[in-house]
Image (tube, rainbow, N blue to C red; front, side):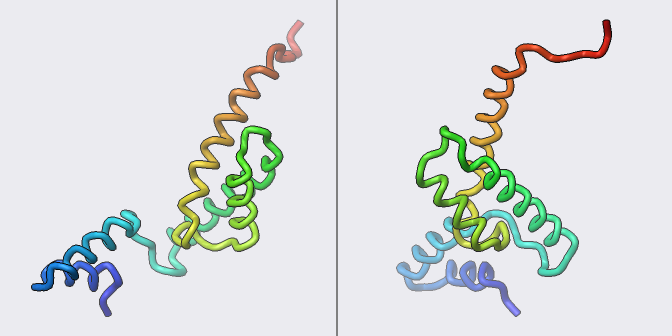
Length: 119
């Protein structure tokens, strides 16, 4: 059985110019990474990592550095927990990175004194 990518790539050899352009546009929109086989260990690991990122973002949703659109994206991902290959999931990694940077910058300001037990 051919995958969707294989079917689109077959259209690149079409004699119709419109089909070729449409196939090129469709391939440019497709994710570059391949989805592991459903139920495989790599598939489960990717889902666990994606859900951990959702949980991270969800627990820091009150951060004042987030825009209303980013908060909405986090809520939608938390409500419809899918996989990293689902539609709309590509918007979460930039928010995750932004929250990590905001947390690191806030952590540097807060940790001006570190307690040590040595006297």
